[in-house]
Image (cartoon, rainbow, N blue to C red; front, side):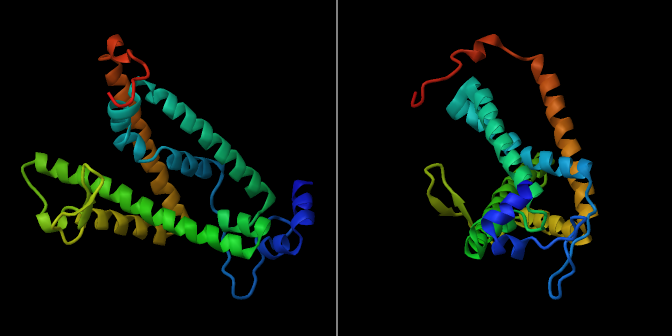
Length: 240
């Protein structure tokens, strides 16, 4: 019923984007690649949870707690989780109405036309580009620090990004040519994606299990060192 109402509201735009067989699979249209359904409920759940538990929980939690929110960082995570839940519900509803590959691009194209879909598609490309750059740089700095603990080091010319932000949020040059650890990480991830959807799903699930185990171990060992006086004030005054 929802799908019928959606098609009645948006008409030919919807039909142009959503061309499906009765079983929900996309038609084999000349000139358009087709995708096989190889992901089940478990794989999709793992991919979704892995996307929610990203690098930020490891990189930014301490910064947010020490510089800004204090103990109230727990409320920050609660609000972020609430927003993520609303976001996921919206995506799930759109996916049930528009059974076509393309994600947000297909949804925007079906609802608002090809031009809006084009804008959404390229906005996502820009978002993923900046996200990959930021996450790989953070991962690279952690790897460089870990290697330095062993008494070894990366050459300065390939250990950091050529341009970085200073403490005053100003762009500064680092003297490096390129970030070798970040390039290796991106290349490895690209190689996994090239192997196919199944391989990507397996690697994503493995990484998610490692992240969950790391968080559980952190909570388990950190709980023994909890100090009640650190929770006061719960919401610190900003600027002091």
